[in-house]
Image (cartoon, rainbow, N blue to C red; front, side, top):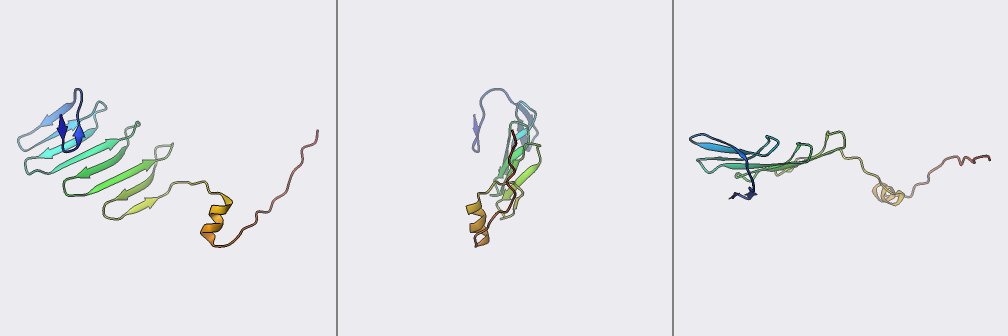
Length: 114
Protein backbone atom coordinates (compact mmCIF):
# COMPACT_ATOMS: atom_id res chain seq x y z
CA UNK A 1 0.00 0.00 0.00
CA UNK A 2 1.27 3.49 -0.79
CA UNK A 3 -0.03 6.58 1.01
CA UNK A 4 1.15 9.99 -0.30
CA UNK A 5 4.70 8.74 -0.84
CA UNK A 6 4.89 6.38 2.15
CA UNK A 7 5.36 2.78 1.10
CA UNK A 8 3.78 0.34 3.57
CA UNK A 9 4.86 -3.30 3.47
CA UNK A 10 3.98 -5.60 6.34
CA UNK A 11 1.81 -5.13 9.39
CA UNK A 12 1.26 -1.71 10.98
CA UNK A 13 -0.71 -0.33 13.89
CA UNK A 14 -3.44 1.98 12.57
CA UNK A 15 -5.57 4.33 14.67
CA UNK A 16 -8.69 5.44 12.84
CA UNK A 17 -11.33 8.01 13.77
CA UNK A 18 -14.19 9.40 11.71
CA UNK A 19 -12.15 12.27 10.24
CA UNK A 20 -8.52 11.08 10.37
CA UNK A 21 -6.18 8.13 10.76
CA UNK A 22 -2.59 7.48 11.83
CA UNK A 23 -0.13 4.71 10.98
CA UNK A 24 2.63 3.61 13.39
CA UNK A 25 5.82 1.63 12.74
CA UNK A 26 7.06 -1.42 14.66
CA UNK A 27 8.66 0.85 17.28
CA UNK A 28 5.29 2.56 17.89
CA UNK A 29 6.43 5.77 16.17
CA UNK A 30 3.89 7.64 14.06
CA UNK A 31 4.90 7.50 10.39
CA UNK A 32 1.79 8.78 8.64
CA UNK A 33 -1.28 10.93 9.35
CA UNK A 34 -4.15 11.79 7.05
CA UNK A 35 -7.38 13.71 7.65
CA UNK A 36 -10.65 13.95 5.74
CA UNK A 37 -9.75 17.48 4.57
CA UNK A 38 -6.81 16.01 2.56
CA UNK A 39 -4.16 17.16 5.03
CA UNK A 40 -1.39 14.59 5.45
CA UNK A 41 1.99 14.33 7.16
CA UNK A 42 4.72 11.71 7.17
CA UNK A 43 7.66 11.07 9.50
CA UNK A 44 10.97 9.21 9.22
CA UNK A 45 13.19 8.06 12.08
CA UNK A 46 16.77 6.88 12.44
CA UNK A 47 17.75 3.49 13.88
CA UNK A 48 17.65 4.96 17.42
CA UNK A 49 14.07 6.20 17.01
CA UNK A 50 14.96 9.89 16.63
CA UNK A 51 12.86 11.90 14.16
CA UNK A 52 15.00 12.75 11.14
CA UNK A 53 12.42 13.98 8.63
CA UNK A 54 8.86 15.29 8.53
CA UNK A 55 6.88 16.53 5.57
CA UNK A 56 3.26 17.62 5.19
CA UNK A 57 0.74 18.53 2.52
CA UNK A 58 1.21 22.26 3.17
CA UNK A 59 4.72 21.97 1.72
CA UNK A 60 6.46 22.22 5.08
CA UNK A 61 9.39 19.91 5.77
CA UNK A 62 12.16 19.64 8.31
CA UNK A 63 15.15 17.38 8.72
CA UNK A 64 17.49 16.68 11.61
CA UNK A 65 20.77 14.90 12.24
CA UNK A 66 22.03 13.62 15.59
CA UNK A 67 25.47 13.04 17.06
CA UNK A 68 26.67 9.77 18.59
CA UNK A 69 25.18 10.78 21.98
CA UNK A 70 21.73 11.31 20.46
CA UNK A 71 21.80 15.12 20.62
CA UNK A 72 20.50 17.00 17.61
CA UNK A 73 23.50 18.48 15.80
CA UNK A 74 21.80 19.74 12.63
CA UNK A 75 18.34 21.11 11.84
CA UNK A 76 16.94 22.57 8.64
CA UNK A 77 13.41 23.37 7.50
CA UNK A 78 11.56 24.62 4.44
CA UNK A 79 11.24 28.11 5.92
CA UNK A 80 15.00 28.60 5.69
CA UNK A 81 15.92 27.99 9.33
CA UNK A 82 19.24 26.16 9.67
CA UNK A 83 20.93 25.29 12.96
CA UNK A 84 24.28 23.59 12.41
CA UNK A 85 26.20 22.47 15.48
CA UNK A 86 28.05 19.59 13.83
CA UNK A 87 31.72 19.18 14.71
CA UNK A 88 33.87 19.12 11.60
CA UNK A 89 37.49 18.21 11.06
CA UNK A 90 39.28 20.62 8.73
CA UNK A 91 42.67 20.47 7.06
CA UNK A 92 45.11 23.36 7.38
CA UNK A 93 44.33 24.29 3.78
CA UNK A 94 40.58 24.44 4.51
CA UNK A 95 41.19 26.65 7.58
CA UNK A 96 43.42 28.95 5.54
CA UNK A 97 40.74 29.25 2.86
CA UNK A 98 38.13 30.16 5.49
CA UNK A 99 40.44 32.73 7.10
CA UNK A 100 41.71 34.13 3.82
CA UNK A 101 45.39 33.91 4.80
CA UNK A 102 48.15 31.39 5.49
CA UNK A 103 48.64 30.05 9.01
CA UNK A 104 51.60 28.50 10.77
CA UNK A 105 51.25 26.05 13.63
CA UNK A 106 53.83 26.35 16.38
CA UNK A 107 54.67 23.57 18.73
CA UNK A 108 57.44 21.62 20.37
CA UNK A 109 58.72 18.42 18.99
CA UNK A 110 59.26 15.95 21.77
CA UNK A 111 61.76 13.18 21.19
CA UNK A 112 61.34 9.84 22.83
CA UNK A 113 64.39 8.40 24.56
CA UNK A 114 65.17 4.73 24.24
